[in-house]
Image (cartoon, rainbow, N blue to C red; front, side, top):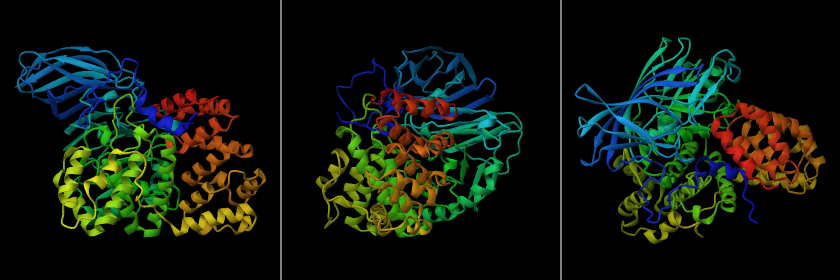
Length: 628
């Protein structure tokens, strides 16, 4: 029996648990988004206006969504929108400032996709109209996490934040929830007076706490980039165009950790063209934020697990900033093409790390990513290993694990190696300029690549050489293999120490990067005695490390080897963080070590109240499906 890891199961379940009534797709269309109910071939949204009250007592947003729409099919009379657990009170159409009521109904609910909201347009609706929906969200919204004061850094004020990617915007706004469309938006948000609202829009660093906040996003964005947070946030500048929002208890620490953000922004502009979004600010959220970062335009959301105190984990900021070009400026048209966002962004991230820090630091990140990619190939079915696979709800939008990130990055690095960095940079700049504010497919990218590079005189690669990266599993035989001299040294030290050739106190961990420490831990032999683990922990205190990524690597080893003396620290790790990457593989290792599946479930029951609803869903399902 092929043993799939819990980490892969969790990633897949975030979007793959479709209902038994999910439709079959006999004629697969790679340009179609199969994760939306919206009839975008008949109607498209150009602009969204929100007018919402934030009610912490009821844990709901309540108010209006106004969609400025165009009718593409003159015979169409019903608009189909995406929704999930929304309470819609009324619908109306505005035409020339006159309001006409509209009939609406909900279609059949799908476990994965939510519920189609079907609005029958009145005769007054013309080619262009504004659809007004009065609605409220559910406390169970998959996009929103409502935090009581005790789960915030300050412990005195509540907080709420959103996570719309991939198909969760529909759980806080009724809309056409697909990356195939880009919309502008504006919003009026009313909150308790002592709290501050921020959005993926034009936040004012000097905004007074009035309890009513106005936002505008003039650049068109896909719906998964809609974002909001309300809490006891304060602002500090990082540079002329950059700054940070967070709770006051984390502000000084965050300013230190992310001090290089302005330099990253300026470096990225020098390499890949103008930053088109105005300001670039960061929002550091509580530990329950489920991801390392989210590239919400103008305001990247970040996990506090990056606050290592030594700026060793800021590659995540470089990644979210890079999305300002790859993903936000030019977006994937469907979730099948997510590698165009994530693979290209991972490539740009590495390039930024080379300049801001050094090539060796970037190479360390590349090697760790490559090792994770090889692990994914052992877990992910072959039909999901292509960069552009057949992507329908049966497969699951997130069923590729980290393949879109690391395989996509390797693909672009192979192009750079073949054509040279200067020519490849020219190609990338042309790609961003040509497709700015658009959504593209893999085939669009391939056609542009063929036109600008593959068909040039003397080109070292052909389309036939490139297509296996996009459409076949695994890696081509000539794929580049990243190397790092510092990680090689860490692996050698791991072997020497494990064999007894190096004393525990002589392991040069104090002079290594965090990435080298992680590689040392990951390189420990499988048969290492518990006495050796105890000695290692006693001298280097891995169980008490402040660095969340080192802790992740260490506690995976602790759980897999059943090194029970460190289990209290392991559980503290699971209670400290809610970021899926940091905790899912630890639960996985516990569930798969042959003895601790019940313990993993007990630890999860104790911790889950602090996790984001998405993480609760992923881990619950993963543990339910774990062998044993």
